[in-house]
Length: 401
Image (cartoon, rainbow, N blue to C red):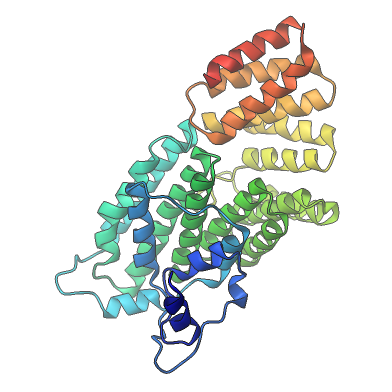
């Protein structure tokens, strides 16, 4: 940007819209501290979420470079929603716009399920661009179409799921700065769409995506704040699986922040909620958070807190009692269980579990699975001369190749 453009922003002669988050990210600012002048000349409307997310998707399709993920951008997401967006769109639909009804909303939800099932089985690197092209080519005309306020809220909610899925797939596709930056922006837009739709569960789930990414990137304080926002949005939900989902997120963030007391307290809240969940998961966005997935996440939290026996018990529960229906998820749990058994000094148990992990991981395009293979290889370097360890390391080398 040129100096004159910044001057117009500072003096209130031009309102920062879609580009404001980029300025916040480049300068590593806290969004809450950024002054937005309030003048009579200024357009009072915030940046339009639909326009912003479609620009994001088109840039992705065109393979343009994305800014790296940052702690400032993650927290700035909390201040972005435009709660009048849907009402404004119902009044300003252009002539000739497509009329949108429940059929279009159902189509988006069905596509999200199909793409999500595929990604959960084969990894986020599989078919991610299908999700983005569906957003920019099929869903875009509906978002700019004619609809009632009720249909608009359902359409925004369904699109939030699609955008969240695109973010998750980008995060799982690569560890690089561009992949993570792309994921972060999708998560932030998923939150905006959900908040504008008035859906607290989707809002909390999008914030959970940002929180988990902050944990992975080492933004510990930001992860805790985002985890607290998850719990805040989900505190009045009647779905116990959703409540367990968000409480476990905060527990995970606190454990990473070395706050054992907070982690233990919210893990207990999460356990209480998951114990009340019905056997039938329903159609909720958080319904996939089964007791088995809770057991996996809890096991890793307990591992970080140093309780390896309880961690192993929970991971065993996830695999053998509740079961895990997705190959990618099962592979990750097996990798984690092997690591816990190695830390306990159970070399035979670790090797047996890791062999099963390698077999399960073949063909999965997921950065988490790739990182788990690399982690296992490094740990096996300590056991030169042990035939079983050398054989397993050779299998890992072939899988990476």
